Each structure stands twice: as C-alpha cells, then as structure tokens.
Image (tube, rainbow, N blue to C red):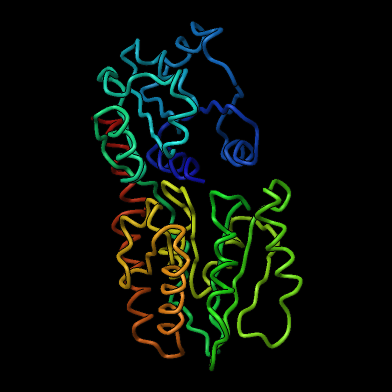
Length: 341
C-alpha cells in the first residue's frame, strides 16, 4: 500500500510511471488498473545492460526496500537520479550483508532514505551515516468524528500476519495477566491472513478464541481477513490498536490508526513509538515486558469510557500527528523535491 500512495502522487503531478516488481501479487493488479505498465523481473545482473538502457529513459528511479539491491549496484555506476527507500530492521542487514553496497559510499545520484528513526539508526550503526527520515504518506480516509461507543466493552484490535515478529503471543499472556475486571469488559480482536502463519503463534490464539465465549470480562476473538477498505472501517470501530511487535521499523497500521481516530498501544521497538508520545497520542510499553504491557492496557481501559474528554483529546492529538507526519501532502513534498531538485 505504501507504494500505491507514491504512484498516486506521481500521477496527480502529471508524471508518467512504469513499474518493475520482483514478485507477483495484488499490488500488480491495483497498479495495472491505473493504466501503469508493470513488468516482473527477479534478477537484474544477468542482463544488466537492458536494465540500465531501460532506466536511462526515466528522470527518477524509486527503489523500494532493501531487497532490489542489485539495482542499486547498477544505478550507482550511472548518473540516474535514484531514491533508495529503506524500510527493514537489522535482521535484513544481517541476511543481505554479503551483497549490500556500502551505504556510506554511494554516489551522489543515489538518495538514501530511511522510513523511520529506527531504520535510520540501523543504517548509522552499520555504515556510520544517518540518512534523512522520510515516512510514508497515507491518503486520508477519515470520515469525521470518532464514535466513543456507549458500552462498557473496550476493544483492542491487532492486525497482521500471525508470526513471532508481530508478537501476538504476548497478547495472550497479557490477557491472562489482566485478571477479572469489574464494571467493564475487554475484547482482544485478531485480524490477519490465516493461510501463511506460524502455527506456534496462530494455533494458541485460535484455541483461545474458540474457548472464549460467554460472560467473561476478557474475551478473545479472531476476525476473517478482509480487503483494505473494510480493514480501515474495522480500525475506526475499535477503541485501540494493540501493536506488540518484537521488530517493526514502521507499522503502517499505526499510522492508519492515527488517521482513523484509533489510538495505538505500541511496543517501544516499533518505529512509530518514536512519534507517539505515551499518554498523549496513545500508549507506549517496553517490548516483551508483559507487566508494562498490562499497565498500558489498563490505563487505556480507564481512559476510554462514554463521554471521555481525555480519550477525545488523545484522538485529536493522534489525528494532528498523522497530518503533520504521515499525510500525503508531507510525503508528496519529499518525493517531488527530489524529482524536481
């Protein structure tokens, strides 16, 4: 979805776009629906001359993520204006260490960007340089006033593939640690792709959801995977997003939560935690610290009650944070400045 926003920005500015993808998927169909040519190419070195001949026909090349690193090796030998936008955590730098170019020695035509402070720190740790931080931009889908439900049920939504990196198993531990609640009930909602999962993470959640029915004050539920438009509606209906990731340079869903008026409870390992101020835009807890996670959840429960002015202030502060840092206007300025500079 991040690349779709870049595509729309260039189109709205009147530019012609073509795309190369290293893998087929839903994004390819979305891009083709906009009339943009898309080609598949998994390897660039074998026929490097044809790639560079093709690249020379463009005013700007945007290389998204660390994975298409072969293109950087080639483009670094040219004067073609290039943005290399890095999103990945340290583990990717470890995996690709043998093949990555030295980011401190890239030629001036390569504009290195980090999607978050966490990624900028990672690049600095590995190469001794700190690139500019350019977060993604998200088109505003907010439809108006956030509804604070007149119920005593507080909902916490977690979105993402079921895997250890996303930390959904930590939510089950926190749910057990919360204990019985009085005058309020809590729902932990899990939504994500259930076809490509880590069984050690997904199966306990599935069993907990099957066993969690009735008058218990803490309830576990799973939601079917859905399209992005409907997911934004689900985010807007939740009271909080719960993001307990063990590694997450910049969770898009947290920015979408700010946009839709749903505050996040987020681990401090996430890149978004560098923007979200604890108790102002949401709640931040120490990664993998169950006690601190429970503390944040309980504070969130206490804050969210019908007519809560404190909750409304948090939603408003979050919306402002989105506008200032993750709106398409902010992102558009960064992209077009490089193209036109």
